[in-house]
Image (tube, rainbow over all chains, first blue to last red; front, side, top):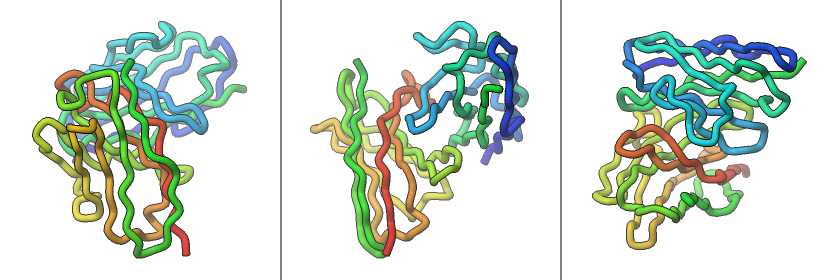
Length: 107
Length: 119
């Protein structure tokens, strides 16, 4: 199985801050990486697919980059609505695997 | 509008069987994979497996192979996740989710079904 490692596991930032979350794969997954946002008590929602493509309807302050084994999710200007846990997932090969999650808190 | 509507919360005893459902609408159900994802209380997301309703091709995560059964009935646009003998450790939220185009990537999610197993 491909292991996905996210860092940090928790981050606290102020409104307006630029926030970066990292996801590392245990082997190359090309660009077959997605990012999901899960707000408390809700189902996850797709934010980014194919490493850098923004899902329709997702705010433009979210962006993704990377390929191979190193990926990042960036929030250009943190908003109160961004309080959530963010997960990466590789879909290069079965079984699909998720990272452990990054909980974003507002300072 | 794509929608996945899951069956309601369940409370079961250890050793009991259970089948939960996920009904798709707003798209051609047979054409897209349906995945199941587990989230244990306070924990992260775990991919359990996936089924193609068109031909019932099913792929399980090794972690869940033999522990659950994934099935689908394309005639009623419904996918299922079932257990033959529940354990307390099966207590979790279970999400179904539709794939994106011709990939296995999870795109649209159901609202989740909370399964509680307790004596």
